[in-house]
Image 1 (cartoon, helix red, strand yellow):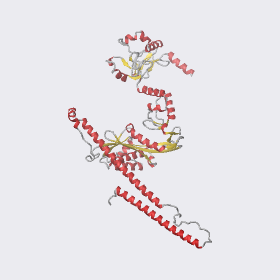
Image 2: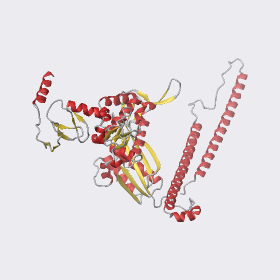
Image 3: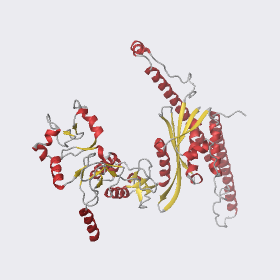
Image 4: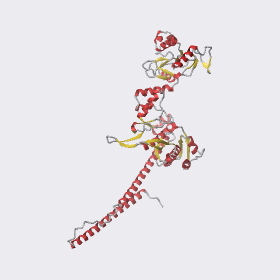
Length: 531
């Protein structure tokens, strides 16, 4: 039997609606006529017996038996079917539009590549006449193009009010061969699909391949970040759980519907955008609407640290893992880490995602944000590679390599000179002497001058000589021996003799100096006794 066109369905539904309304009107007319006839008969009967009391008006239509209007119910069903048909038609038209838009984008990218390969001489001569208009009728969509499908499924234990629940969500993104985003969608998983991360991940793959089939894509590579699941879908390892095995089989059946469809393994960082889509699907399940005192509608969700219901605009999402916590809890967490001298990570148990410093401005004092950024920068530069601006009002931290590249823009022969320019305040300074740049004076001559002796680094060296401190030859940091042996391990990792400065190699001294002095050992013992 031939399929009924949408227009024919619309006509049939309209005819049924008119017939039912006509039948309802006719039935109401018949009921009204019958009721009038019965009322007239009762009036005649009462007239013949004038002494009888007046009887109440009675309804003979029979509508008072159950009071249910079946006609309205049928009309509501017809209206619902008609609306579903309209929605389906809108969905089909939207999908057609998306397919044409995708095909046009592919056409434009191909055309752009052709233009890039045209020699300059030919482009100068014929560039104004070079054209390739897009035509829907001439192009077969996605015939030879390869597409990339990114999939991610998540299961998370969350709080909704005072109730702890396990919820799941999936995220899918379809990109072209150059990773330009074409389509993205997220979906909430049911209770049965949120039992384990493996099930959620496989549901994401199934959903992603279904979306690719909806777009009539022919060549597809789908990406996942779980090595165990990668072994499942490639057939290297057989799934033991029945639910997981069923989903793996479903993925295999979907793969057969494509001329080319292969899995590929990526790291977590490469699927962050679909990770966020899946996380958004989870968040949509744990927030609830609530009216404010001003009558405005807002949404709240429960912070898993303090268990308080917080408005969604006061929740902080950690970059990378997208775990969410309220501003108050995050503020306390970050401040504690700062006091411990550490960089803040996600408070969620087992999560190691770093908290981005620039995002903390939402709940932290700007001065603390600067401290965190500075601390993170200090941790990323090795001790021997750190350079500080000698300007007391600046003291900007820089790496030797970056300040060298920066200075090359302003100073000729930078590689052969110790002159550097601060990347913040712009001061030229000497890398060796750690003072403002001494023009036309060598470092050796400047170190003997009064200017150097009065400068900060000169005064430090003078103090070091009087206190018998030792300077590390690798990072130039000053080391003071309070107690213990003369074998020094600097914070940069360099090992040397405190007496003469000679290097220690493979935990052995290269000089003949004594390893320890009795006064330092006795002092340490006395300190321990006082404790």
